[in-house]
Amino acid sequence: SAVISQKPSRDICQRGTSLTIQCQVDSQVTMMFWYRQQPGQSLTLIATANQGSEATYESGFVIDKFPISRPNLTFSTLTVSNMSPEDSSIYLCSVDRDRGDTQYFGPGTRLTVL
Amino acid sequence: KQEVTQIPAALSVPEGENLVLNCSFTDSAIYNLQWFRQDPGKGLTSLLLIQSSQREQTSGRLNASLDKSSGRSTLYIAASQPGDSATYLCAVGEADTGNQFYFGTGTSLTVIP
Image (cartoon, rainbow over all chains, first blue to last red; front, side):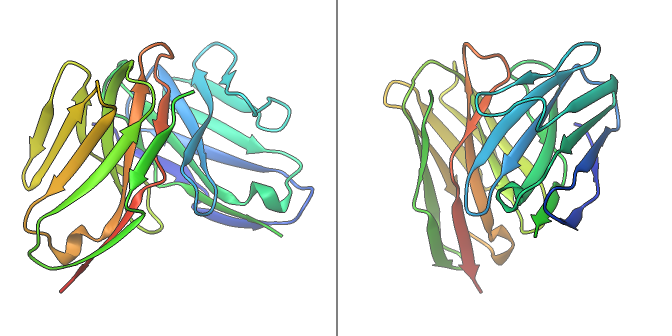
């Protein structure tokens, strides 16, 4: 298994500002994933973060809006830049140990943009 | 692109009932399928993982089945308890996209004491 923590757990931000979300895993993993869950919606993958390389973004998500860092095998950050109310969502970090393995999720960061 | 649908969107049952949650997906070329539980204000907890070569998985009172050819999976919960109240999400791992999972919109389950 994997234990994942996220900071902050929730935040209320003003339009136009940026927020950086941290994800910490209790053991080394190759791939980390960032998801967004908008109100009443399903989870959507934002990007995949591998240590030592640029993150891979899914269609509809760009690096300028959601820059990601992956400085080591246990940590990643996601920044939500120049926020608007449409960015109000739960942002979740997840990992798996190998392709096809169980995915483990952090508790999520609930973001509200005013 | 894979589309994942869950029916019903919400379900309310009395304690002790057996129940079935449904998940359907449009592309049968899947790598695996995973059922999660999401509690309010919390992350997702993995319940069962079924590889594409498997037909079912069981854990305690939970049983998940997979029929790839028809694009369907079911999650069976036996003898439901109030603690089972949560949102249940189905996620399909695609064969060609590495670790990409496509999620359904979930079924919100309430078990009434």
